[in-house]
Structure formats: structure tokens, C-alpha cells
Image (cartoon, rainbow, N blue to C red; front, top):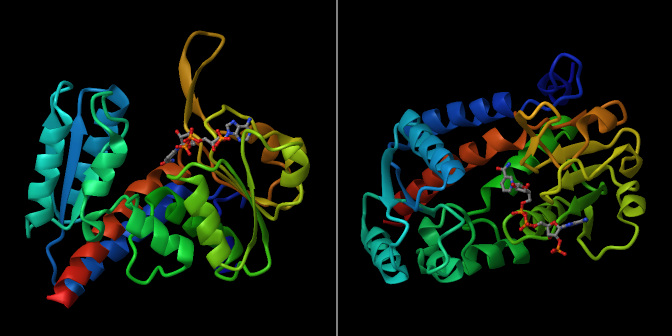
Length: 298
Ligand code: NAP
């Protein structure tokens, strides 16, 4: 069995994100020890959005599990923009902190762009600062911190297809700064031929049907149906959508109609259990990388 196949679960089509995320955490723990660093992660939450609270708690817990210093700042919904900027300024100067993450979305009185750009680029573990985005865009990724969801998605693609993606046609559905655009840049860096589909794209299903690799990051439940998919394609579903079923209960679905696409795809990441767990692992990897770079630059 090839390495790629071994990472697909028993039926060899589901790409197991939980298993891959665990593998990354194990590597992080041993790298932390061998590099002899004490990474510190600060997570800032403004308000009490229930989903954001869960994400933030999971991030802090995982940081503790990795043996990192983990600080969580729960700020009141009415916190002003200048108070958040002041906190970030102090964390930028704090030698114990290597990574700063501000959970999005922020309340209306706070400009998310201003907040993100105020984070020191070397502590921007979400990879959203213009300097890190620009480094990725220009292919200069050696010293960059890269956005977690796209790097996690790329990791899963390689689990399914192996390390060499040269010449593959990749279609990315969605062009957000957080997922779609950096995903496209990463795939380009891997020598894929990349097509980006967005809300104004004409006949998206025709374009998507040409893809060896499909990454869906749209936010529309089950938009991608079987007629979008070429037989044998690798499909990564980034979408997380909560839908209400006929019996009134709710469940999570992706942007891909899993039941339809599954029989056609060579490999598919499920929702939940695919990309989701990878994002937090990549955040830990960025925090460790930031700590190691700081040590090496001192
Ligand atoms: P976003 O900022 O809302 O961007 C959505 C993108 O989809 C936009 O570029 C939009 O095009 C495009 N789009 C909208 N309707 C479309 C259509 N009918 N056909 C083709 N493209 C269409 O969303 P996001 O932040 O990238 O997130 C996307 C999804 O991923 C969401 O479900 C989110 O919850 C999920 N997500 C998951 C993780 C994770 O850890 N697993 C992390 C981040 C996001 P325009 O630019 O033309 O408007």
C-alpha cells in the first residue's frame, strides 16, 4: 500500500483529517523538545459569539496540549477598537508570546483590517498580515507565516496524491483572502495549473469538471454536486455549514454534496472530520515556527 493510500481510511476514499491533524501535533511536540523552545500563543476573543467561543477554547486547549504557553483574552462585546489595538501592541512587545490570534468576526465598532495589520508579522500566526500574504503571493515563503486552513488543505491533498502535484489542474471555488486566494497561491507554488471560480464565474460546473483537484471554500451547503466532478478527482471540502434537517435537528455539512460526489471522487475530505481539525494543527505549527525563528534570530 502506498503512503498516500494508507492515509485514506478503510474504504480508501475519505481523507482522514483527524488522523492527519494528530500526526502534525505529534511532530510539533517532538520538534518543540528537540529545538528546546517554549512557544507562547495569545488568543483574543471579543464578545460571546457561541461558535467563536468554541473555536477559541479549542485553540487554547490544543496549545496547552502541545506544551505551549497559552493565554486567552476574553474581551467584552463593547470593547473599543483602541483597547484591542493597545492589547495587541503590548503582546507584540511581549517576549513570552510568539503568536497572536484575533478571533473573527469582530463586533461592528472594530475594523478587522486595522486589527490584523497591527499584529507584528512575525507573530501573525493566522497568516493574514499583508507582509505574509505578499510573501505567499510572490512565492517567497521561507520566512512567511501561511494561513492555516489552506496549508491544512494542501497537507490533505498531498496525503491523497503524494508530494508531487506538478501539472495537476486544481480548481479552487471561492476567492476569499482567508481561504480561496492563499489556497490558489499554494497550489501554484506546487506547480499546479490553477483555476479560481467565484460568484460571477459562468458555467462553473464545466470548469470544475476539468479538475484533478477541487477545493471548495464557498459557504453554500452542498453547492458542488456530482456533475461538477471528474471521475477520479481529489475533493477537499473546506465549507462548514449548519443546516436544519426535516426533523428539526441541525447538522454540519460542507460545500460539497458528499453522498453524490463520494462514488465519483478518488478521495474526499468529509465534513466534519476533514479540513476542520487541520486548521488548529497548522496554527500550532505556525506558533512553533515563530518561536524557532525568534530563537534563531536572537
Ligand atoms: P467567504 O469569505 O464568504 O468567501 C466565499 C467565496 O465563495 C467568495 O469568494 C464568493 O465569491 C464565492 N462564492 C459565493 N457564491 C458562489 C457560487 N455560487 N459559486 C462560486 N463561488 C461562490 O468565505 P470563506 O471565509 O472563504 O469560507 C468559505 C467556507 O469555508 C465557509 O463555509 C466557512 O465556514 C468555511 N471555513 C472553514 C474553515 C475550516 O477551518 N474548515 C476555515 C475557514 C472557512 P465572490 O468573491 O464573488 O463573492
